[in-house]
Image 1 (cartoon, one colour):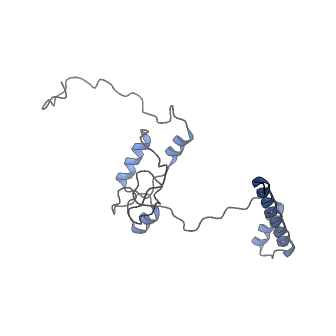
Image 2: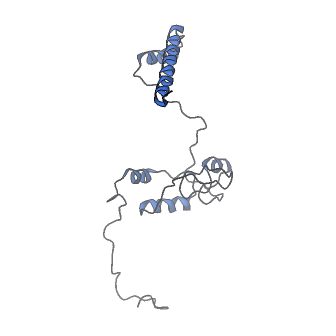
Amino acid sequence: MSSQRGNVSRTRAQRHQNTQVFRNDKYDTSAQRKKINAKLHEGLCQHCKEVLEWRVKFSKYKPLTQPKKCVKCLQKTVKDSYHIVCKPCACELNLCAKCGKKEEIVIPIEMSLEKPEKEPSTTDPRRRDRRRGSEEGSELNLSDLEDDDEELDSLVKQVKDFKMQRTGN
């Protein structure tokens, strides 16, 4: 037998030879699988990055359901599977987020401290005009602001009325 101790010479070829590459999305075409396949592993050393890529490739990667506790700041801020350090701590201390060692980071963490503001919707023509006006440097009309305040007050009143009706008071 080939598993005997000291038997290093083999007389035949491997019995099961993989002729096709394993595809993790062949039968599992769910949104979660697509999200896992598209995930970018950043803030990791080369070894940890390869380990996580192997897990994804062979359907062994299990995403977190709840945040874990960071070993540096002791807050529940670790949102990536198999990581032990949260992104802010890993970025600040220049550590690998998975193993926690001070290794060379392959893909640095892209952390913007300021959240990007969403573009206002262009469905409301007044908002579009207001945005264009601010880009051109012109001042806003006070009547437009007063109209918005009146609309906001009426919406708040409608919400309060709805809550009163719902509770039965």
